[in-house]
Figure (cartoon, rainbow, N blue to C red):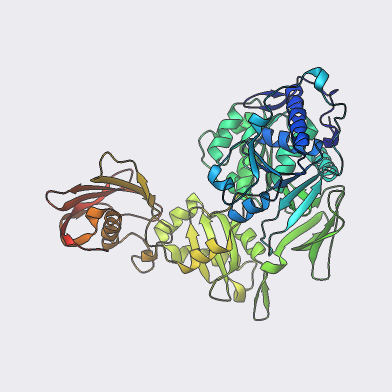
Length: 571
């Protein structure tokens, strides 16, 4: 059953249907709340409302209420200063989670908790005569700015209605009425389509929270008979080995993935446990363009016309775009659709060669040692550089063979499809890449990875029973700088480096900022290896001016000893 988005408030639709769950919200009560909020916005003569929501059902309520009141909505992608300032140009902020500091940073716009604003329930006699949403109602979204400056993109209710209907027609589901759960925010175009417009259009129940971790997605799925996942490759790629993944076989009716290409290994794993993901290709400006499931080629949706300009970059036109939109994505036409070659502005030119980072990433993801990969020009050199998240097998290879042999093996793998002159010469390895909510790697993170040496784990301080005791946990980086020449074929952390970690952590406290007279009872008992989870415990004895320390992994103590301090010295 397809419900047009502009007619979603029709009182003739089944009133007992659940629009949302966790907690439950019937269509009748949902509609009453929308109309109540719409009336309040009309009374305040609101023309523009900025939205910030964690609960997807309240988000849907706010969008429909604003549209019903004749107001447009602004959807900031986050509450960074620039985006909060943009939201501050609206007449009102509507939210379900007021963050006073974020919203009050020099902004004069009224911030309203939607739950308080829409408390009362309308009686049947008070229901408005007009329940339709104007086809010209607008939502304004901000692009990520990955291709340059961020842009404001306007979507109308009619465009969202057409896009949701097209997706509903094409979406493969193994069950008629799954509950929609998601890891993505409705504040972005992907979530706006798939966690707002699509569930309403298909009459599906919407699970309210945003479940950003694989474990919370699995827990959310366990609460329902069948679920439709709205998520990203970054989340799906971390499902391997997650507790409870076996339950997916009976819980997932469909999995939608967008934001970047899903690694084949992740797709195959999900097909083994549940269903093969339905991948979406599109953008904020274009909405959905194409999909794929069992093939490498992307197939345009039925209502989407695609082509390429003289540079080979894709253009798209559909009922949900404002005419033809020219993208910067290079494509290779195929009989069944097209293959993405990467963004035009990401192509790396080296001498007379052109390197496609997208192709390099795709080829690397086919290797059993690679779980995720990102390729771009090195921040300080012209050559292609690769930042790769290694799989469990890849981490084991690095531990047993060393990073040089892992990099060499991956270069050999790429040499089967890439010209030897353009093979990446710069490599960084990690257990996981820091992809953002849109599954993208920021330029700043990439630059940091290749220009700042990793000298220690990212320490996390644990609760302590007294000021003289402290405990820190972290994971040894795969690319720790000291692995370079220290037992290159069997990387381990040098003992002197372990001692430096203890010294640096002690220096975070007043009692640790003193010169060291001597080290006593120093013992190294077990190697510390790449990827090891480690804990350092510190216990300071003020009477004796000495620090007892232990460095251990989950299985055993790796190092221990005492630092004896002398006079105070700032460090």
